[in-house]
Image 1 (cartoon, rainbow, N blue to C red):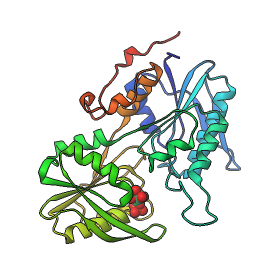
Image 2 (cartoon, rainbow, N blue to C red):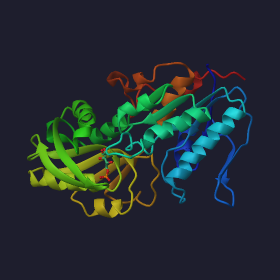
Image 3 (cartoon, protein in one colour):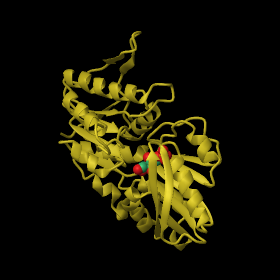
Length: 340
Ligand code: R5P
């Protein structure tokens, strides 16, 4: 297949879809994505998709207009179903933030594996391919028997850190838990920095406690790297512990800024200098806040979509030598072969 991509958007992060569309020089397909009076999700695709290579962009997260995580999921599923029934040739679910990802295993008896349920639902509705970013655990790719492109925000976040002078032996990259060590190692390598690990435990869901720190943070600027910020507790507690171990300052970067509950207050009143996230999850009202920075990863998704439609390697985007403006390996939209 070598066709111009046809983009559609749900309501969870339309600003990101618009940005991706602009970079691809395509329009966002017409679709009614709303609710009936009885609160059921209502979908109507407003243009011909017969034979098309369709990409539905939808983060599985709350929207800024008050729709919940489950609304986002249902919109995605029903859009895929509608597109399949309208004879789209291939439907790719572009899920910048894959909600439910933390529920990827049974950590005690009688719990669901919700991330797998989401994968099953995407499959049965007709999704043929997934494009996502920084899955909570890379193994979630195995929940799908279809291609999954798990993109990385790392180039965008590292470029920002380098521009801010946060690299080399001035900094130490810190993983805020054992699960994030591999990710932190990649950042440390790219930033030419040393590595430290905070060990945490969760006495109950959404509550974290630091138990230990391994590695030398003393006198350094610490950059804590995480995949997501939910309640903010992990980062706030890790920052406290790192400073208590002699770090000079603490910065944090995370791919997905969910900012659940009073996370913004928690982070505002924490010892963290700056909280840097991407726009996989929309966030409004903090644009002018000196402590929060939101970087766009639209170009990374645009590059991946072009590469998929032209059968080029997606992983090349993340090979060091090809890095350019945050994502690297850009393919000009003109290289898309159109069929009409
Ligand atoms: C945990 O394994 C994740 O990588 C994040 O550290 C966690 O989800 C952050 O959650 P919170 O902000 O609620 O502490």
